[in-house]
Length: 489
Image 1 (cartoon, one colour):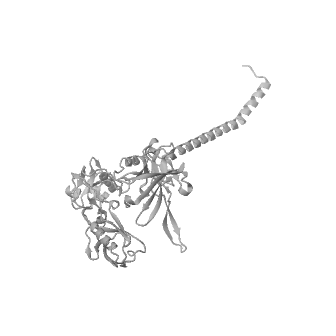
Image 2 (cartoon, rainbow, N blue to C red):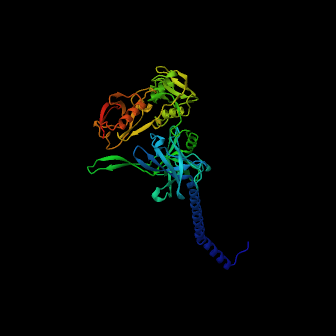
Image 3 (tube, rainbow, N blue to C red):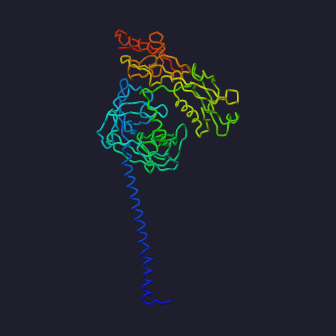
């Protein structure tokens, strides 16, 4: 072994010292700079993803043109395809409004706030109640990109997700970024993620951190608070956000809805079984009947006369525990079983068949019952309407929803219902009781009314008769019958 000279030993010690106390900070600084560069790179990448994904969301404006009111509505929407199909959230258009009252649809792109291309209303799907419009040109709006061009993925509990908010017109439809975490997943007839904070504009697209589409935000964000009163008492209140949402409908349901765009804006005919007021089976009842621990079903409430259910021999109190090839399972939310059953029916078409697994009332054996679905009755939105300006109110057809509210379990019940009453009009000032929306018209000036057409004919005659000074209506509510005496000009 060769010994080092004394000078070389001292130099070696200095080198070791410098390496220990000088290179270490350099190493830390290098690591910090590397982390900072990586973060900057990540931020730059996220900004790039945001700028690309925001191309799939737009603002849609339309007019609700009711009897004498004209209201402008703005709602965020998602571009679905290169044909210019746009998806609007369920709450963007009141379900009871007939399509003839929806006017002047236009789409605005954030990058081109003066665009305003005209659109046509297509209707809403029968399951998720998304609304659809399409550009008149039949092409995606300039500068947009359909969400279907991006990869999609399911959301997961605790996962960070983000969305896009389109500001209102006075912000020139500019875009903003929102981010939150999936705090709960509600599994019912369809999956909905609930987030801790606002995650997107209502109707806006939502993505995971990789930029994959995970769903559409639907419903207002609601913040539950307690209001403290001066007397030491308190009341619970809910603050609703008119711009943002904290719930997201899963991407697979959005894609299913796209396949269910109706051919008629008023809605196509859907399957009907004719069961009302059904409710989930209680766990103790399921156990008594010998169902498995995870199995559930619904108890039939009432049967509509002449319906598919009645024709199949189903009765009030029978239990439905399966539909075609699947059995109903216990869910965290008890009501969800009934909703899943409704979705099973809605996925069928009039004339389709299904095999129900049924336990007849008072029995324990499961039997297969084949049903052939009816055509669904008219909805309120599909009902005919007419406004009588001089009288100060409008009417619409009496439909099955009205019959159900009155416990009339027949599809063929006809009549007329008051749809809207103009404030400060002769109808609103009627005595001894004012005319009210929802009242069923039983008599007009002592003449019995049996159909919508009869009501229209009588009211048109009275409105045209300038010598008529009074109109008397007999209206039937769910619980009472009243008389409204209207003084005419």
